[in-house]
Structure formats: C-alpha cells, structure tokens
Image 1: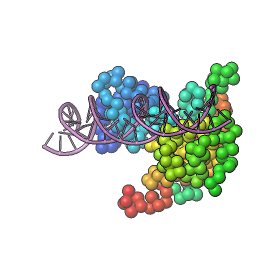
Image 2: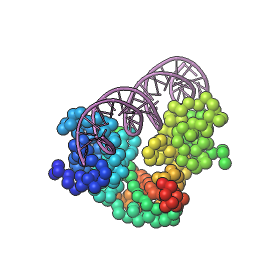
Image 3: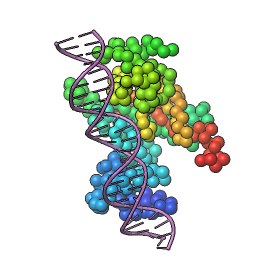
Image 4: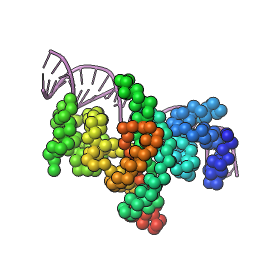
Length: 144
Length: 144
DNA sequence: CTCTCTGCAAAGCATTTGCACATTG
DNA sequence: CAATGTGCAAATGCTTTGCAGAGAG
C-alpha cells in the first residue's frame, strides 16, 4: 500500500530523478485525499524532517507537468491529488468537504464546445458547490 | 450602455448603499470582459482617482455574495464578471484567452450528481482548457 | 566532473484587515 | 447621530525564486 510502484514508474520514465523526497511526496499523495502543499509538507517531514516547503512546491509542479498529479484550486490554498482516474469535484461550501465524483458525460460536452470554438488538446473540469446533507441539516436548525 | 439600471437595481434592494464607487465598479464590469481586481481598479480610477484597491475587493465580495458578480479563478489573479447569464469558460493555456460558452446540459448532470450525494443548493462551473486555433497553429510551426 | 536536486531564506503577488475619517440616511 | 462605506497602509497567506552546497550518474 505504500510502495507506489505504479506511480513511481511514471517519474522514472522521464529525465527526472526519483529522489527520496519525491518518492515520499508521491507516497503522501497515495491515500487519495485532497491535500494542500502545507499538509503534504507535514506528512513528508515525518520521514524526512529536513524537506523544505519549496521542494514540495517544486516537486508538485513537476508531477503536475508530467501528469501524475492533479491540482484543484477553490479559494485559499490549492489542493493536490494523485491523477489516478478522471473525476470531478463536489464541494460543501459550509464544511469544506471535497468529494470526488465521476461524470463521464462532461468530457463529451466539453469536446463539442471545444470543437465549436476550434480549440484542441482540451481537458475539462467541473466543480459543483453546495451543501452536504449534514451541513444543510444544521443550517435548518439555525446553526448557520 | 453605461447606465446599468438592471444591475444597480439589485444592489438597491439590499441593505447596501449604492455609492459612487460601487456604481463605478458595476459599470466597469458591464463590458462583459473577465477582469482582474487590478484592472477594475485602473478603470474605476479614471473617474474616481482616489478609490483604493481595498474598496475594489470589498465591493466585489459584496457583489458576489448578492449574486451580481461571478468570480472565476484559474491560476494567478481571480477574474470577475457581471452575472448576467449562466455560462462556462473555455481557456486557452497558451494565450490566456477566456471565452464564455453556454452548456446547459452541465446543470442537469450536476444536479444528478448532487442528488446522488445528497447535496443541496448547488451550482456548477465547468472550465475547459486547451489551445485556441491560433495558438495551436503557432505551436505547429515551432513557435511554442 | 557535470547536471540535477535541495534547503534556506528572501522575494513576489493577490487578497484581507484594522483603524480613523468621511458619508449617508 | 448611528450605521455604513472608504482610503490608507500594514499584515497575511500562498507560492515562487536565487543561490550555494549536496548528491547522483
């Protein structure tokens, strides 16, 4: 569960080195959460206390460029996650919960829109914001 | 074209005052572009040289809360536009062009996804990234 | 021995905030 | 005059960058 061979293989096929810092960052991303650079830093520091935040950002940027990591920004700090499958995001505006949701139809719509506008090499991201059941319930009881 | 009665009416129906600064900001947003706070500041300054950037941000935040303005973040500074119709965005990763595109089907997909996850009061935003015809052409000639 | 990577610290940019004064109803 | 809005400047938060040394091929 922590070997990450599938993911690491991606890095090894490039001119980039798979250093212990980079391996640790990839491992930190494997649990599937939507982590901020700060959180990743904390996690990586457990193993490698000397790693700097700058390295986290530099590495995440490389991983994104290669396509191993997906970024997701929505107010405040950016969130990073391993790019395993294509999915979209459902965000609760009250508690901040982020849920990954599949929605394959979006790609088709995006493609049609792109072609209409003569855009190529496209990618589409849908973000749905709203209230989760729990937060909607609390709101109904006046707890904002 | 610059009276903005429709938009101003929204502000007037709240407890907020329609000051000359706020009116100028609303007017600046009326040409339909995707402006940064900085750009709005420059435009408003033409009429009201003393307006501060802080006021721009404070006002935009109120307008967003009321629903008169729509924000759109995609790397770098946030973009603001009048919330006239519901639309999505098509962004060229090379030149930064942002095109408004209709895609009414997205709302239905988002609603279904939200219901599956028991989310309520939702809104959906789709962002398509890619290369516009012009930039794709330049790339083909090795001009990055 | 060259090229890449890293830590550190400083800089950068976008945005928010505290406060005293101005403005409005 | 009580409440809201504003300018200014400082503070904040996230991210990027320059540089000198460490490490890998």
